[in-house]
Length: 139
Image (tube, rainbow, N blue to C red; front, side, top):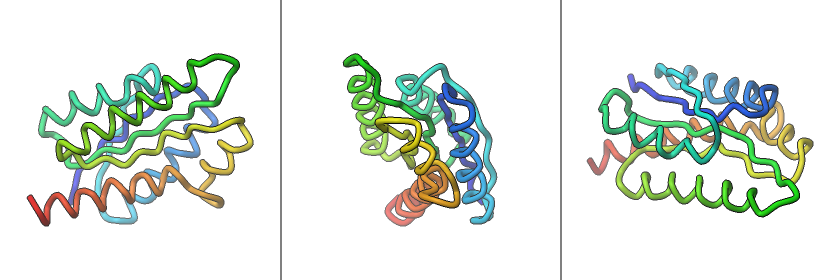
């Protein structure tokens, strides 16, 4: 049984609750355990994953958050840099599923977060477990 750490940037509570519901369900349905920690924003997720990965207390990680485009360039920085940070960790062999939604509006976020629609939280958890399986295979 794997131990999965869900790292969430909780900015939009109602959207994060939906993402968490999907991620937790996917992990539990696969027979694994999980914990959840919260960080201030999406930019902090890669750092939290890196710190936790160094602890050797977790086998895989799920990154969850919602970034909605605003009127400034900040959206591009947050979306790009959080993804870049997670990709760098995955290239170093950390099993991560990226469930950080980067959307234009709340309607898009809801459609992606709901388990009855796109279930991106669940998909991110399944991706983390798939990467863990590959890590174990090639490890």
